Length: 227
Image: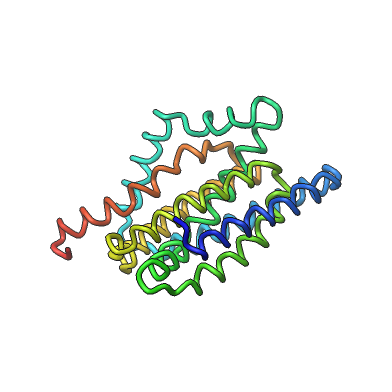
């Protein structure tokens, strides 16, 4: 958990969020709305790209189904909103979810963490830190304080992967990364649809799908005899 690359990635998000948060306060509402649309369009594009890397469509569907049922039972999105209180809770939730999924759903999270944990090679996470730091500026300018909270997600998830890399190295396999990226991609796609106000989707309740994805990929491998 004290890996230097993970700490730098976390700090990069905090610094970027701080810059974006105070910059965003000075932006007129019409500019903030335009930023929402720009982020929404980018999120949809990234989501489609990541989904196309899927390995097993049934694993992706199963992960989303189990994830959203779990999320609805736990009412994750409502719990996130309570952290912000009633005022600006919608932007807070959108900021946290958008940043968390963008920073963690791609393959760089798994590959970078496993390389850091097994080989001591932090290069991927360092590159990711720069990307996340820049992204967090724009996100915090648009959504506000919720992006700060995503730094905790980055630290906990990547720190855990680095610490447990010796036991989780199988996650670097093509099938695992493909299905994980596809699940994250569809969550991003739904998030983009929400951000562009096409349809209101409680995207936060889909977050457990990212946990179910590697489990179902493993089970699918057992059934097919590839494990």
